[in-house]
Image (tube, rainbow, N blue to C red):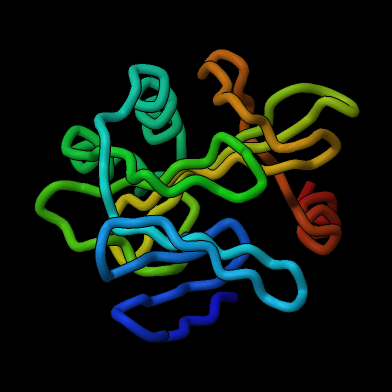
Length: 174
């Protein structure tokens, strides 16, 4: 769930968990707004930089091995850059800006979800789109802290988060 606030002087803030915590549609400068609950929301103009080789290699692998629709986003990856957005938790998550496409709206449709590590060192990473626009790569914590560096593709294994109901259904089908 996310909440959009339109504030003063051209700032548009989107507040949500590990989504674009805030985007600024005004001048290219950082601002920090401290809410009473000590929630920091950073805003910035959408600036981009070329993807690193590691970001591109990981995203391509995730799309090649993700859901059936994931492969359709490889062409967008070929025209993608990373935005300057950074998650406040310090994880390695990043967002895309695809040349020739509008900025991806808030929302998450997962194209590929993977786990890294074992036991207490397990974390996850997924690639997602919103309304047909390649949106980002999210690194998230499970047993361990969310990683501050991206994993290599050979460290990934598919995440299989079945609900207990779907597990019971699978056993009944067997």
